[in-house]
Image: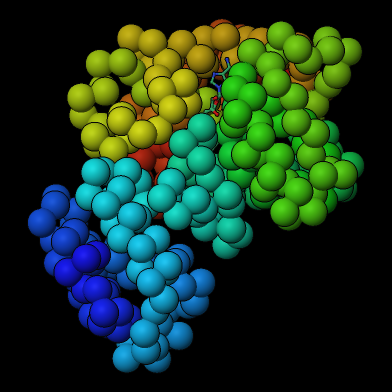
Length: 292
Ligand SMILES: C[S@@+](CC[C@H](N)C(=O)[O-])C[C@H]1O[C@@H](n2cnc3c(N)ncnc32)[C@H](O)[C@@H]1O
């Protein structure tokens, strides 16, 4: 940023950052520079374009320079800014939690449609979100359906992020957070109408195919599940059965190549109405099964 000292005109600072990011492998340096600048200035895109001739403060410029430096080092934008938009809501993020993906919005669309279609009074549903991370699934379901969600994660730092999001969206009375390794800390007397999970499902050997910024910055515990990526489903699918009411559903986000294997696991664990659905890119991403 020192090259710009004394002339902190917003448009010029933006051009400086774009040039810096162009020297990396980032595919949209202009977009990313703008994204970071909007976060520093706390304005929207329209206001930014009306402000290009204005000056920014030295403090804002310094903060922006630090953010651009972090991005050049490969850190994901969402961790640098500390938030992400998901389901048209703003969620706080730290590197303790996975950055929520669009695939999970698809899983939520399917879940909400299925629950609304099958249960006449969604407000009365009792749901469990296993592996809540930043809390996005529990938060959206509690908000959209008006029901209660028990949200679990093995990671206490992740639960702290979820707690902040739930509080910011004023859903504390509908979402309860619990630290648990799958069901180990859940009372066996509890039963749910739906258990939903986006568990870790990447195979260890796929690590080298992931973007560096994913492997380097996102929590491994949220991503990897053994040699074939199915380890978490191997426990979750049979263990969920005992925690479902009769007629209750298990809904899962799955890796695009895991439909067949997950269907077999669901069948072997006794689920009925097994269904694998593909997302808008025609990749199987959603699996569900019903307890008889
Ligand atoms: C793929 S992330 C999903 C986060 C969030 N639900 C989302 O969709 O963005 C998986 C989450 O499962 C949690 N997790 C991994 N193993 C777990 C286990 N044995 N018990 C509970 N949670 C676990 C991780 O800490 C992580 O937050």
